[in-house]
Length: 287
Image 1 (cartoon, one colour):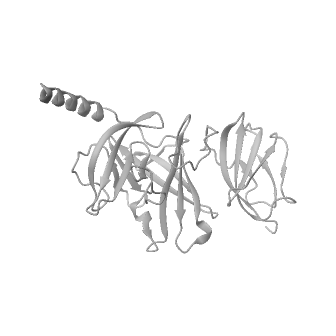
Image 2 (tube, rainbow, N blue to C red):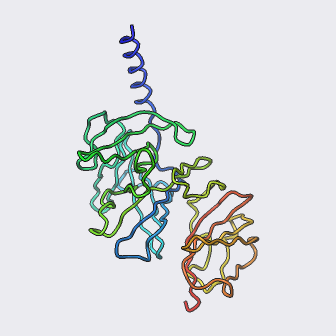
């Protein structure tokens, strides 16, 4: 009787697990990673990945991911979902490279060389149900992969520096290629997954896919907000995490030239405590 019950429970689990597919990388979702940029010390810190509009290239509907570095630089990646599989898509070579596959079973090899699936399941992460996989290798290194979010580091979240890039596992080679990526948080509308308490839990990111909200950028310390974006508070954060909040309206210019030194800042716009956008700004008075 116990054996029959166990088989029944197992079958119910397999059916529910296999039907729980979700759509990855929806517009406005935001991922944050702590990046150690090898020899490029000016690019150490929190990097933002923001999901933009779906893009059709070579007949495929691709997810556009914009990677905002700390330095004045952006990367654009394209990802492709095919049922339970997520691919990185190279638009030049028209080539798909598998990243995640949630149709894998325990013992199957993963896309990360030397790793197999140790376990699968459905669990709550910050109150929301997700399918997950735990990957392991011969040295018993383990990494948790959450459907719709990706690799998030060690399953017990006890290691801030468990390499866990969003796009490519070549981002875990340290001084070989200069970059290591460590997951910090994910946000999607009213939901935030922040296991390391890195992100701002008090605000909801409503539309982080907004681009060019401030202009000009770079600037001399005086800039404006796009008149089509309605905000009432502007938060300006430097690379050390120091912040200053300013009450604004969209018809006025923001003048920082006498109070802020040259440098790189992250500018966030809020409306009624909800974050509407975040954008990197370069202040250079000799520009």
